[in-house]
Image (cartoon, rainbow, N blue to C red):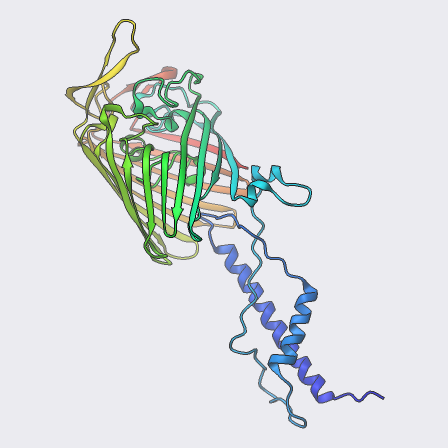
Length: 483
């Protein structure tokens, strides 16, 4: 007959129950944290952790037998004390959510491998359809020019695709690249219009169709070593808070400051050095503003700044461009500061302050028989309210955002802007929601109020528009599908 040590068996059962309770509690806590992290800037998971239950059972038995130990014969555990695992016993890491589906998944093989993923290459994009009932002084209608009919209709704003490989210098030399292409009524904002003279890169290249344009806003290579990485080519600016891709911001519409006083793209070189895990500096040379592999008016500028994670609740970013700005003047600078604050798990704010100062003058078109039209600067200072330029020589922008997560799928936002180009104040107040019924779909309704006591001018343009552009209310809604 097999002799059973009931005291030892009971002791092991108590320890097994306690250990399983600890593991279960850790997993639940990990799931809660995962649901709250990264909602504003989700980062795709690079791997999925799978747990084999049979191996876990063996591990539990091993812990019980080797680490917890068996009490001496005749000694019972304290009646009111729960046994605890050793101090060096680590929590089981929570499983990471599956990476979102992208176009890269089209190249999965039958065995589950993927040549692109294995090499760190990602192919992805989005499609955005939207409607605005009026021009808004920014993207919709082409700013104060109002020369493109992009309102009062359902429009394809962006059909966007990109392929990228991020340079990883953590193990020595690493290389990467990125190429973006887009088509839609937002295409002209992505083009290198700072080239001014047609036919360079993607500006007025003969592929546009009325208000629908093609653009290649990014095409660069990247090298990295240890904490330093350098982009070489054509890339988006680091100046300001809002961006060209519709997936990179909360609102459908854009700031007046962003459209009228900040660059969109550059051509040149930009380095990033990670001083610490919380502080990075950026610096490089670019051929002015909004150029694509072309130097208009001898454009040559410094582009740089820093990014500082002050705490888990505050980050500060500063960026600037200074020098010969190309189409925005042969002398000038733009400085931009952004403070982001997470007040609670659901409530956050962003505060941006921009200053532009330049010697920009108006452009004059020259026509030489048998030669393409070209543009040169004259001696008349540019002015935001002058139809000959509709471009500010100097400006100040102060923009504040507030965001609140109502549910897992609905987030509310408000944007208040004060924009003062060439001495006249303009105000906008935008309120809206982001509704995300599925991971790949987001719907964004909004209302935008605009008023400027100093600018009561009547603007006329495409589609028979005639009205006080900067004194009106605009309604908009769009939907974005990511893939």
